[in-house]
Image 1 (cartoon, helix red, strand yellow):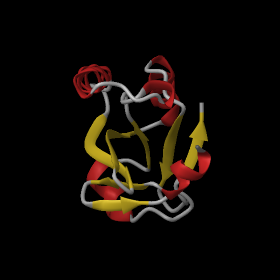
Image 2 (cartoon, rainbow, N blue to C red):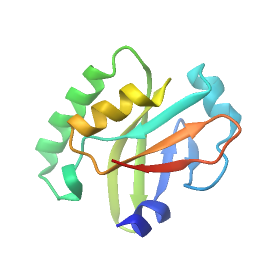
Image 3 (cartoon, one colour):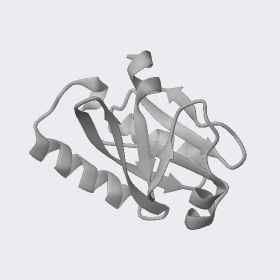
Image 4 (cartoon, rainbow, N blue to C red):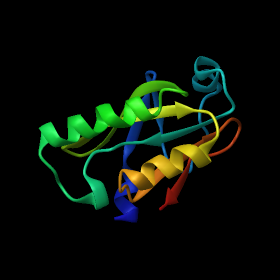
Length: 120
């Protein structure tokens, strides 16, 4: 599973994000912050769930992120795709939300640093 996370191509704000690679400054300028976290409510514990269920959970996650600047994002690997959100700001509150939505990992971004996978 870790290999799949590392190979996934993430996109937010028209910018590609890869684990272990630096994130372009343009993304942080757009968010108005030096930190951000990629997360989703889809497929908790990496178990496939129906699309309607995933979409409802994603709407709830977006609502819970209302105090953050949020960009729509996506993760894809081969034919798999998952809707994601990029939340600008400190990662700890976002990580708590990801745990509440039973996610296995998030991607932490810091300006000037490489994107980092954080297992939960």
